[in-house]
Image 1 (cartoon, rainbow, N blue to C red):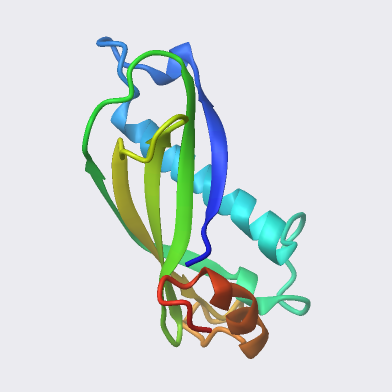
Image 2 (image 1 turned 135 degrees about the horizontal axis):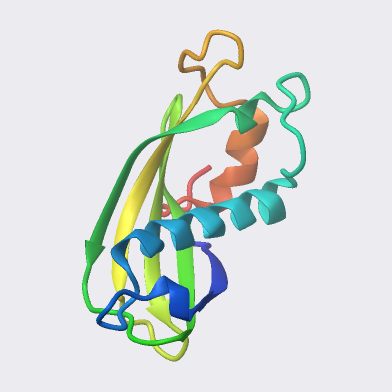
Length: 143
């Protein structure tokens, strides 16, 4: 399985009163990693254009996260993402939040996004081109 990984700083203002990464920041780190994934693997950036790339129109359906151990203090962490499942209109990302020096999770979870039609905002199938480009990141190695 191919995955995408990004390194993020944890700063003083990310911490709660116990000097632990605030729970809301985990999803922010996942969001930033997914944004970087879209930019680096799909070339997505700038202004959305339904005519140029309708697959960029998608909405988050669910986020799920389980916290395994706390991130304490400032420093850096890694966020690893992959595609857990690719449906007709949906895509499920898996993710892990990891320290810099080992593969023992701070947290793990998933996000489901749904491709939508830019005009009707109704679910619409992912394009064949999108499926080909995202295929290598599928957990089962399919495409």
